[in-house]
Amino acid sequence: MSQTIQAVRGMNDVLPDEAGWWLEFEAKVEAWLERYGYRNIRLPLVEHTQLFRRAIGEATDIVEKEMYSWRDELNDEELTLRPEGTASCVRAAIEHSLLHDGPKRLWYAGPMYRHERPQKGRYRQFHQYGVEALGYAGPDIDAELIVMCAALWRELGLQDVRLELNTIGSPAERARYRADLVRHLEQHLERLDADAKRRLHTNPLRTLDSKNPMVQEVVASAPALADYLGEASLAHFEGLKRLLEAAGIRYAINPRLVRGLDYYNLTVFEWISDRLGAQGTVCGGGRYDGLFAQLGGKPAPATGFAMGNERLIALMRDAGSAPPAKPPRAYVVFQGEGTIEYALSLAEELRRLGYRVVQHAGGGSFKSQMRKADASGAVYALIVGEDELRAGEVSVKPLREPGEQRRIARGRVAEALGD
Ligand code: ATP
Ligand code: MG
Image 1 (cartoon, rainbow, N blue to C red):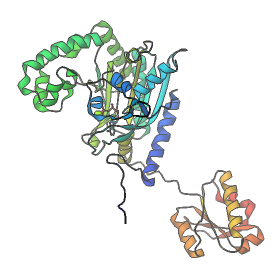
Image 2: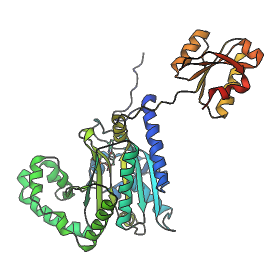
Image 3: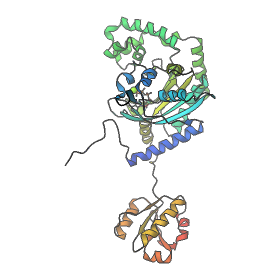
Image 4: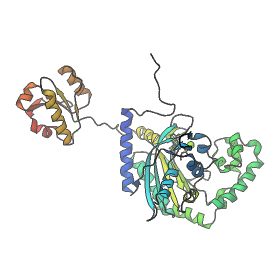
């Protein structure tokens, strides 16, 4: 016998019991997006590798080591499975001139691919909802996005998701800061780890959020980015903080929060839960005013965030809301000559009226069919035997509550099922 084939490491099946949670999560998220006036955009899973190199930046974890890239020999193209959605979203906005008649509020969803070490909350195929506000410059829209997130956590029944907030200024401010930071780090070379050394001249800001205690000590005495910000950057940040306070949103300023991707400027934020262990960030985002121009488009301000479905669904389950159960209203069993056609049309008729109806399949004795009806969780069994068939009736048996089996006219079954 040949060996069975298993799923690729880090790429998970979502089995039906688990998928119930996903459906519930997705329904809530999509209703919430609609309430805030965001419109759906659907983007390909595969893009030119160059898109991510340019948008995310060469010296980032994603581009350095996490992308699934390959060469398509037939078309002589370098392609990549998308590791995130913002780059594609902006690419599409430029390609289709989506902002020609004004700014746009957009969302997308789906799988993302990163070649990471799989562990709890970290997978190689994972899923995100991404929310992007394209063409808006002010702190008001940054605030809108953050207020929205807080509302979603409430909607999902999550407590203890906290907000960390920072501003990373403009590219020019960051460049000046970067030079001083590099000088400082170079003075403490012996206490930097390999990562920090490697990033020294490529992406030194990432060293600010190093998890290594020795590196953290070096960082603690480093100059602070906040001291390099000009008036406009400070005003944007003050504006945002004021709006968050007015909306009753609590936040903690984390001066070391820089986010992994190159395209951010000004506002950056993360939502973090302490209930998920090391993989506690459920949502991250920020402003990326330079990305349109970086991808060859007409410059346009933009801001957005992405959240990780696996981590949020884990929290939702943890919060102990009742598991989503949608048992059928009725299970149709039948026995005898000519009853299958009768049962089939009965089931179809009820479904057309909107009832969830499972029709027995696979034969078997009446008793075994009734066992299946019970196991399905259905509220009623609808029984069709030769007697019912001849009389144009159906027997209705309550399965979840005490009550007698009753024979009724076929036309009155829907009434008996109630709502
Ligand atoms: P992390 O610091 O956990 O690696 P990140 O900064 O790389 O996260 P983003 O690119 O900001 O993550 O993606 C937004 C969200 O997507 C994260 O906050 C997280 O919830 C989720 N996410 C990112 N990578 C993974 C992954 N490999 N598996 C599961 N979820 C992920
Ligand atoms: Mg990551």
